[in-house]
Image 1 (cartoon, helix red, strand yellow):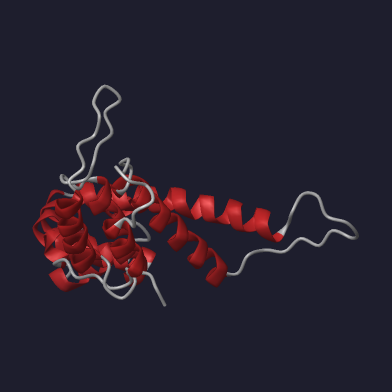
Image 2: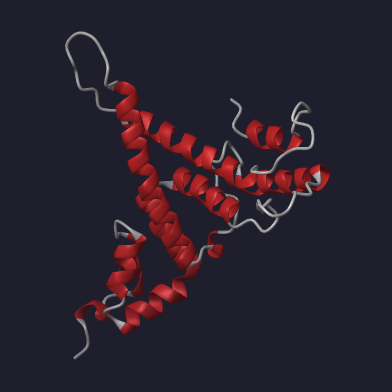
Length: 204
């Protein structure tokens, strides 16, 4: 017997999938139906982006995509404890400028990469890391607003959504710094053009 959901127009099925509160939920749902699984996979990156954008928000997907690219960048320096790093500052600056141009437009709030380039593995990874960063943001923001050692009456202050969003973005940026700029410079007193280029993307 044919599933009733398959009798719906494809646009409605698409809407059902994009209305899921997470990509993982959508993926688990389509596993139960061969036709829906086919529609899900044929939707490709556009469908994956639509689900992520609905659950995380477009600007958050943009910064999360930049962080994903930083983690998997083939050109970044990878520390090897057995080898002294050979750091080509000029080449690294070229790669950093290309990274900033591709992923960090409008302070990392605007997605420039094609939406069709999103993959299921990439989407699930972004979703998983974002959940971790949300928890970190809540814990850090709460500790800042409610210090353990304070005099007088204790008033519990909960961070606002705006404060949590700013904290999350700060964590994303700092994590990208750790991934992209882990090298040791030959002259620590000389300005690091690559880092300055990256940091300038977030200047007001």
